[in-house]
Amino acid sequence: MLKFIVFLLMLAFQVQDLTAQTDVTYAEKLGYPKGTKIIILHIDDMGMSYDSNLGGIEAMTKGVANSCSVMMPCPWVPGFVHYMKEYPGLDVGLHLTLTSEWKDYRWGPLSGKPKTPGLVDPEGAMWRGVADVVKHASADEVETEIRAQVERARTMGFEPTHLDSHMGTLFATPAFVERYIKVGIEYNIPVMFPGGHNTLIAQELKNTSADMKMAREAGKALWNAGLPVLDDLYNDSYSWKPSPDVYANDKKLQSYKTKKYIEVLKSLKPGITMIIMHCTNTSETFQHISDSGPTRRGDYLAMMDPALKKFIEKEGIILTTWREMKERRDKVQMQSPKP
Image (tube, rainbow, N blue to C red; front, side, top):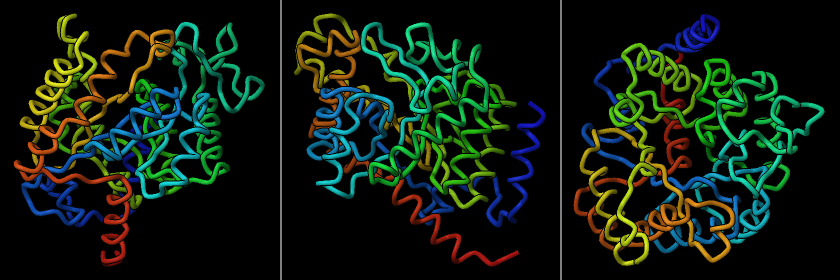
């Protein structure tokens, strides 16, 4: 823990932070007016399955979602990457994957068992749960694997717009967080990390003031390394549990999920908030992968709902992407006076 804190503090003070006031959001630092509410509607789990690819693509090209990330060890990655190359401009990052949670549909580390044995369970796949990764894998193995996932993306011909963490595994220990941030800074790829006021994520995780202080130090480190930083993060849609009759009817499910997302949007504080979802256009096959299909289908239907887009426009909420955030951060960096 001490090494992690020292690492963050050293990074935080490498460059003079000229806008260090606590009431200044990272959105303002990127040039947005004070008080502006900005969102990234982000889809996790691209490449996990055909249904995941289809739902995510439709939610971004026909709906209001505007960003996604890919699980590089999964079987349907080539299908999504081939599509992405035909339609450039999508905001696509890496959903850095260290677990393989489903019962019968599984994948292993790209780095291979000889290099990262601590990431491999008795079936030869990644561990199903975060706790098992923490128990068996070293930070060195974690770093080796996330680098392998970045390199596969580059080998396939796309540069990730950002990095984030599947099942939050990279946030499970200070040592994992340290490697996550280290790799992002070294590759100059934005890292999903809420380092601002963190209003919604603190409520979700019941974080202490000490947790928030450490998160803000990490945010300063990322900013001073030339990367954009989130002001907040929302990742609690899996807890929304409607009655079974809602799940059984697409119209009811769409209405329910749209209302829930509008509630989240109403609760936003000024700044940049990333809202995480899992948009899947579920077919008969998906039930053999996961029982989360109804929840994921609800996310997909909500993003396709014109009522959600209308609300965002009416409230003056701005949509941004990781690509745009990095471009704005680079511009700020160029304009900042050298210390």
